[in-house]
Length: 196
Image (cartoon, rainbow, N blue to C red; front, side, top):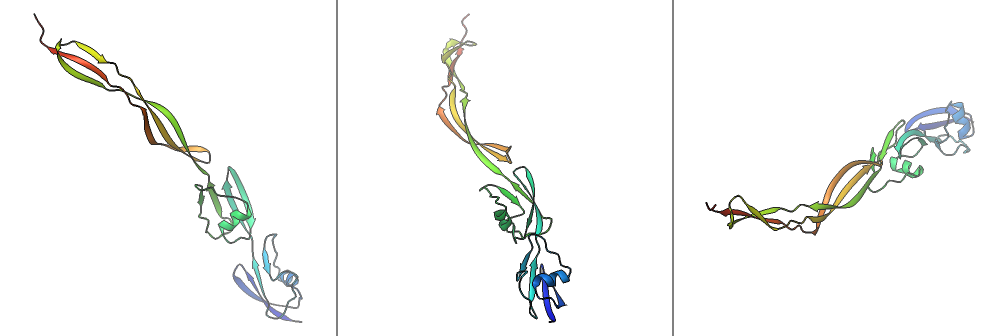
């Protein structure tokens, strides 16, 4: 029995006339080849009736760069977020993905996922002491005397280090905490008159 059916491929519709009885036979007669991940509604085994609409969503190949690998993924998902779930690719809290996860998929699309890791390193650093000079008239001019030796202090430095795909890209001191204050050196400098 003759039937007029509509075939919609990726949103573009065409009408055909066929005497075939199933979706698969009508598609074959029309020269439409299906790939392994193409979705067909109704299913290929469905019996055809007049005015049936067959919808085909073709799979697309998306290139994904992640974790040092170049993946070529054939998918019929609609968005990048769905593709990541299908491919079992998880994003860390700080990871960057281009384009954004809500982007609809297109044939040949290239996706780059950059793994971001932030670490905090603690280290100890010396705090230099300063030298205070006091004038002392009891000391002859041009002479000096150390009243107190200087002692360096100590501080704990916290540094934020950011890595992209395992490579350090930035290092920034985010906190300095004094553990031991320095002791200033005190020098008495003579200001007295020279006796002749």
